[in-house]
Length: 429
Image (cartoon, rainbow, N blue to C red; front, top):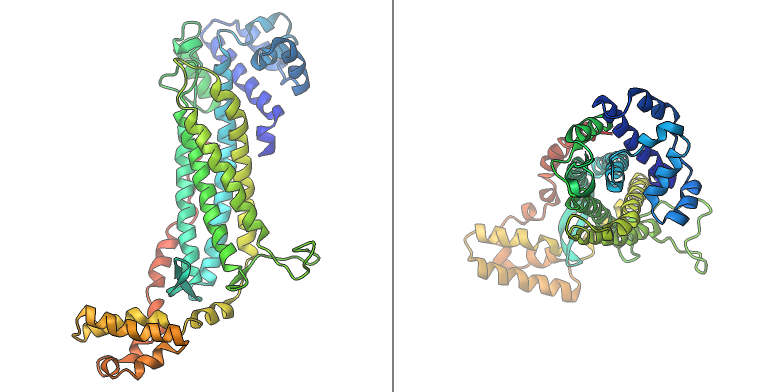
């Protein structure tokens, strides 16, 4: 990923676009075939240092690039950058970089998804307290929680694929997009050589709603990872202690407190998600530009697009590592489940009373009275209910107090999960 977004990587794809244009001009009979062949043989990406040296005088990076390359080509150098404007090169090359970087992101999503599915299967039936508002609700399974993460990663993958497809376009339409100095056929031929579609229309630039969609797809992926990391952080709290991050031999959790095992990787993921979401805002701001273009988008994109890709790539790698090595404390999950005095059975008692013929409101008040007593006096809710004649005489409490009722449909979700096994969808790498 760093190679793609390096200065060397940028200059490499700029040259790729320039040579595709020169070859297309030759096919159209504008550039002599010998000159086009010479450019293909001789042209080499300039060093970032050489471009920076020229830019110090020219104050224009694309012009500095063109001069650096053309200056090494002799007589044929006059055909280099023929008819093109800077954005023809920069925007089309950016599409190539995004295509390459996007393929890496999709691969990382696939790795993360596979890791989550493996752990979900391992803990398909591992009972865990489900929480709403941070408060005990009803039992779920840790595997079911992870299955939800897997489905979300699959949606992230699909969003990324759509955004990458929207970016698979180039433009060689010249200044303000009229083809006055180029030719629509030139654009078609050059883009085809590069594996891109020619934009149906462009001004002096590709329209930035495409880039905004891409940055938002990256931000949504980052936000999914943030959500997963936040859950891990909550479950790792001392009072919960249901999971722990991998902790290597010799690792130190704190410079001051030797006992510490902090969820630092999950916290790092959450922090970087904020950076990527901020990049998405920049993408939206870049949609509205003056007339056929200004360059207020350019300086911002040079920061946020590479940074967003680099951050999400890193986040996905660390999340996969986290999932593969996550310590799951099943016994602690069970103890936590029982720690709220089995109050989670309250809905099953309520429904059983309604089925027995009691009005819902009467049933609710009857169950709630016992539930509040169990909570306030730290008593076993099941035992209180068994001694409540109005309840015990109406329902089969052995059936009501059956933990398996909370897992009986888990297999249905896992059957759906198997349908989203990593799919081979072309990402135009």
